[in-house]
Image 1 (cartoon, protein in one colour):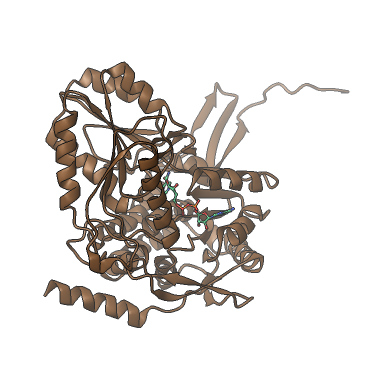
Image 2: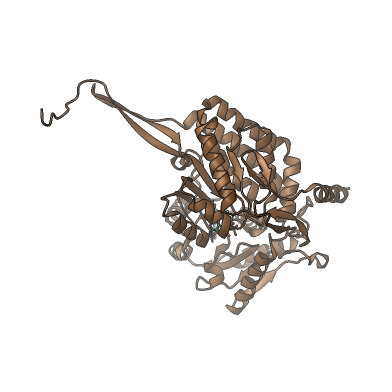
Length: 503
Ligand code: NAD
């Protein structure tokens, strides 16, 4: 029965999925060059549809529409009316959740049980930022005796260029769009070329919510072409980027001439440190979920396991059992836990890291991919045993269901090992000794750290990485620093001294 429902869902998507157009100035339009590229289903590697491939022309049109909307209707809305649109988008996402989640799984290979939660979070992103803006977007007042009252206001910056990756497309897009729009900016979104479907579903939803034309625009296409054009456009005031570290650095170079503001959410290779006094059952659950959820294509994945030598053997044995039991397969099925990787190029990349691990001296332990599913980009959950920090498979982000396992003797050693890397996105520490927990947490170089927890987000808190994992913070009121311009207004209350040159 369950299988029939899932097959029907897939058939219905196959039947209904349209080719992907840009969404510019409230209209769905083809590329002016008529160029397209193909989009593939990662479970079958069959073509899903064709995607409009944009270039300078579409970026110019989208930016000019966004500029007009910012200077016109959107920019002049009362806050209450602007936020009503944001709530409306959230309601519509909730209404269509059963349609968006399968679309996301079909396009990306992420298991449906996980995309459902991601889509629910996307709706929450809009509601959360509507609430944040109405309650926390406030200025400060500075009284200077009876001479001055100085105060700050937050103004939208203008046109926000948002560039997003394919690993959790819908959720990550809304994580940027919600604060950008709620604070009063207009948006040009450049989604990842491997996962275009739900970006257009969002455009349809925003269209249905009735936002004025030009407030939200989507331009599809290759990063080096359309992404680069958005970054270089002189009228785009800020770029919020999530993606690979090397792409982030390229974008910063390209945006330097137009003095863009940047928020950079980049790659990670995060450690999970398990001490021998930890709640091992919970640490094992968190470790397994943290690396194998989202098919391992997760920026905050705990891809480096440092396990205390006293408990290493038993912990690894139990991790191996989990790896054998994880259900690998069709992302459209409710019981699937790991689905196919996004694209054959990425699949080959992850495979080549597993081969490299063998060359570098690891023992590779993997689960199974069902024989009949070998058309897709499925990679079984994999543990790289006997790894060490000198290996490239420990230093580089693999971005698949692959964990490198290492042991340590004491606190000092594990802090050094955890920090011996260019990344600094997230970290996880497991111990019942809370003094040690805090000590280690504060010494690990990472933007975010969890003690005795999996990656549970509190949207009010700052999200972002240190070192090569990012620049700036989004989340909570931290996003206001990026999406708004603070203006200070000085008001003289009395007759303060003014030098009278030449009088
Ligand atoms: P990517 O860097 O290849 O692409 C991201 C986006 O940038 C895509 O839309 C792409 O088209 C665009 N792009 C590529 N070249 C560009 C250029 N020269 N100018 C402008 N845009 C360009 O990343 P990906 O492979 O899509 O995503 C995976 C990466 O994202 C991983 O490294 C992962 O860790 C990272 N990520 C980080 C976070 C975070 O919050 N820190 C979250 C999710 C993913």
